[in-house]
Length: 418
Image 1 (spheres, rainbow, N blue to C red):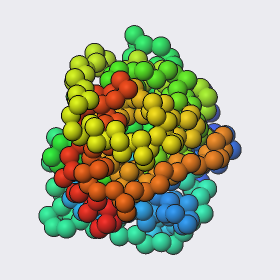
Image 2 (cartoon, rainbow, N blue to C red):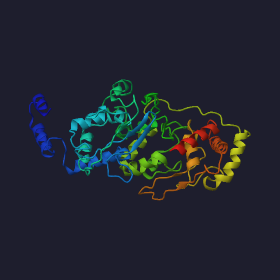
Image 3 (tube, rainbow, N blue to C red):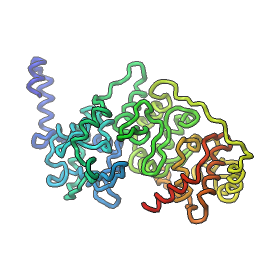
Image 4 (cartoon, one colour):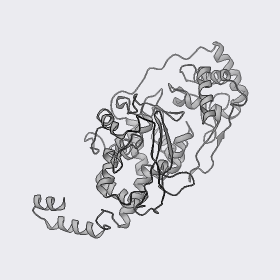
């Protein structure tokens, strides 16, 4: 490749010098830079991309794999990406790493969409090289992971050729010349390395992103992944840029406290983002990708509905002590319920889950206190939980579909199985 470039550019001294410097910074021809700044940048980028979420098992060695990912088609386990030669990526070269990241093709064959190469395809080669160099500073760990644990026929990797034809568009991020530099940086993170759409975008029947509904909410392992478009009713339209920055940095703001998978993301990743990147992501999310994101709110369920009357009494008895009688909550401790888009999501799974099983916020460096929500599955029936959530979703400026007792029962059984 370098010889071809030298020929095309006339063998300039600058290019020859750059090639020589690159070779001096590399380890045995694999393109691994030993430059301190490059490795540090790679570390930051790996944190920005939250690689640890899938590749570092709780209590395990960094990047040694073993985290199980439950998909609608079966179980996948994140592989070992330490530089161990026998069980990790120690025998890969940079081009193989780049192919895995941007095309979903690794030495083991085609990768499944749980590895978000559909987003990572937008990452620049410069950033990929920095990440590659950083990964080779991680402690090599001998940990042989059987990543593909799907049942037949989903375990046949060749089927992914067809999946990619339907769901994957290859290509590095291209800045929008009509947008600001800050917006484009935010877009690069959200659409690329941050792979926000992997969780927040609804999926089609074969697990691909419905790109026409980018960031419009999805369901992940019995959690509602909320709408984060500028929609005022269901999205983050009422959040300010600072609300978004606070949430990503501290795991909380006046609207919400991060829990579940998002708490893990904040703890492992976004609390460490630079202020510049936090602001860029907030700018992008507030402005949106394109088009009108607003939806027409439904009419709230009438207060004299039996479900609402029952839910009001339950709320006063079980919930008002923390979330206050008017649903205002206590900022930083108990989330606000009033006039909150998170209460108005189409899918109430997360709301049902936290009432049934409780939840605990993630503890960050800036906000080390991790308040918790107690579980009520032991002393509230399916109907009671459905009614109180129906009341919350249709009070204090909220309006949404009623919660069904059958939905509560279904999730209760699923959580017991887990």
